[in-house]
View 1 (cartoon, rainbow, N blue to C red):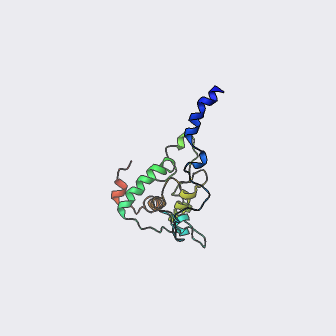
View 2: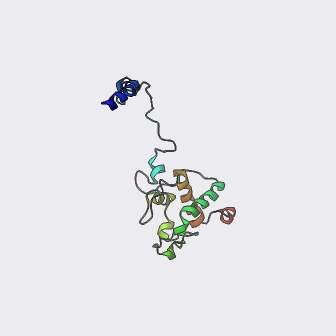
View 3: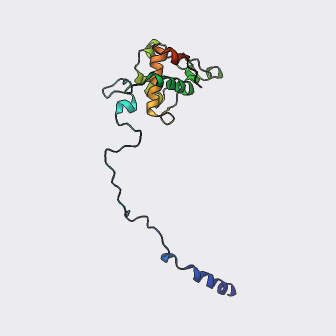
Length: 170
């Protein structure tokens, strides 16, 4: 009883819970935010050919971006960072992890792969292919297209400028 009498002044100083300020979660927000229907997330493209790499009528899309030759060095660096470990520097499927027991990927120089448009490489990087994981969450959309452009133009078509081929990237 004495303990209760000692706690009584402390409890009376606290006030009542229902008198304390608080926010009620289930009432309407005081400020209405109007968002236009055509608004999309930053960096998101709604064109399915650009996002997915496939045409609506079927088949793989062509690259929707135009890249300057200065961008090709960035494509080479991205390819070296994400792709060359398995596919090799020249795209022959002889990457550094192959001797460690990782199954050898298909060479980009096979006639069936060589004939594919850039959308094929973009689609594979976006969704994964066979044992290859998806890079959609790791590489932004435009840079996946840049890697596809580098593979098609520099590794397969040999249309890469000498400055890009000789560039040291890490």
